[in-house]
Length: 112
Image (cartoon, rainbow, N blue to C red; front, side, top):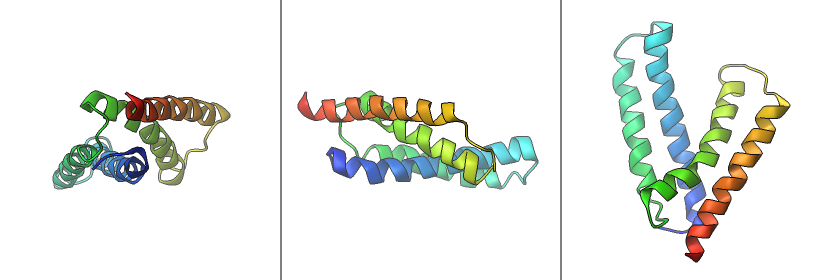
């Protein structure tokens, strides 16, 4: 599997798995949830890693860098929707800058 149009749904899936997996670990350690949730968190993180293998940019590091923009935006959405924290204008500006950089990396990979 390859290509920038294919990358977006994979990156969205990866973000959901990574953020969800990390959140479950956070919930066990910081919020006192039952340790059984660690297993689900680890499954989510493994799924995240597996999902990113589906995008071919010519190197794992480039795939991770391109994914970073989606991760930042998904994290801010999680912060607002799940944690109920209001977003700041600087959150939006920073997310836009990171997404622009991720798009340059992703689409630049197609031309290399």
